Amino acid sequence: METDPLRILQFNSMLTGGGTDDQCVKLAYGLHLAKQKVFVVGPGERDFSTIIKKLDIPFEEQPNRISKAGLILAAARIIDRERIQIIHGHHGRDLWLAILASKLSRTRPKVILTRHMAKSPSSWFSRKWLLANCDGIIAVSNFVKEVLVNGHHDTSSLEEERHHRFPLEGDHRKITVIYGGIDTHKFVPGKAPGLRESWGIKTDEFVFAVVGGYGLPRGKGQREFLKSASLIHSKNSKARFLIIGRGNMQKTLEEDIERLGLKGKAWLTPYCHDMPSAMNAIDCLVHPQIGTEAFGLVLLEAFACGKPVIATELDGIPEAFDVAKYGKLIQPESVEALASAMTELIINPSDVRNASELHCLVDSQFSLESATNRVLNYYRRLAGISK
Image (cartoon, rainbow, N blue to C red; front, side):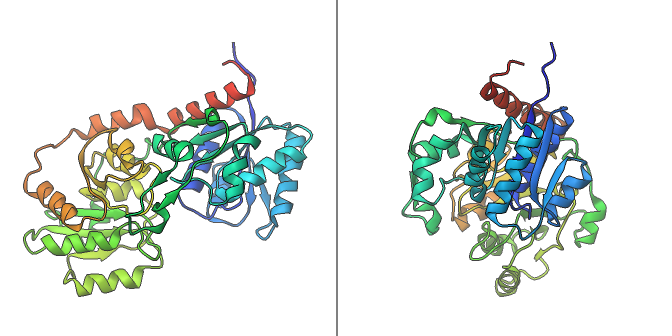
């Protein structure tokens, strides 16, 4: 027996880019394809609002400069007009906005919040009262749930954000782990000779690449990646080291390349909009994260394209790595360990895996369809609806 579609409002006050916006829009699109009545409310003329419109998802566009109060009132009106049953907030700044929009509406939908970050909200008020004022929190990994329930302290880290991550107070039974997903229709094994050529890569060269933003002060470990490259490039003439992304560390990274003697061996690529092609153009993804990491979907994108991964054994990254266990986990902050792992992969690539099998492994668990169904079933349970 078919159930009526749920009426869901995805609440997002940013839509400027990054992993949280990407997962929010992917979820909305998955729900749309699953024939649910899904709406997104947020500012227009942003990177991801344009994507939403192209995907033909019902978008309740708000002015870019709308105040928080204005966005809350707009969401409350949409809730009542569309008889919304679930409102789902994603960014940290959206958690209380979604709660207040629900409380101001006549419909009073269930409030779901996703914690996409490997830390609790920064304010004491939120840590004390958030659980009491929502119906459920989705943690995107077991590590994130561990932080929300018990906290996490790493005072020896060079990263201040790792020093003290405090737990939420309240009913921890409201916290549920639900992994996100990737577009396994796009991230498939293949060749990208044109992109390699445009990057200046020869067919016999082995490409290590870091993928992701590089924001000050330290990015995602791009500087450590270059330091590691400087230790091995003279012994591995065919190794190349690419930084794929964008951010305000460009000048610093370019200076590092010059200072470390890596000119012609390492460089920053132009910003790439076609990430499936980028994954197929490289030979190994390096993910030397040094800050916090909730899960690491970029590892799954590499695995889905049949690529090995060298990543730091930090926060939720091992959970993503365990999906395929292809490559190596290393100690965070260790330039020497990263250099050793890259050297080993070039000299002794003994564990060459079948790319199609890797893709099927990721697809079976982490496709957008699988991720959407996990969230949809969660919505239904909270709404008291049996499938």
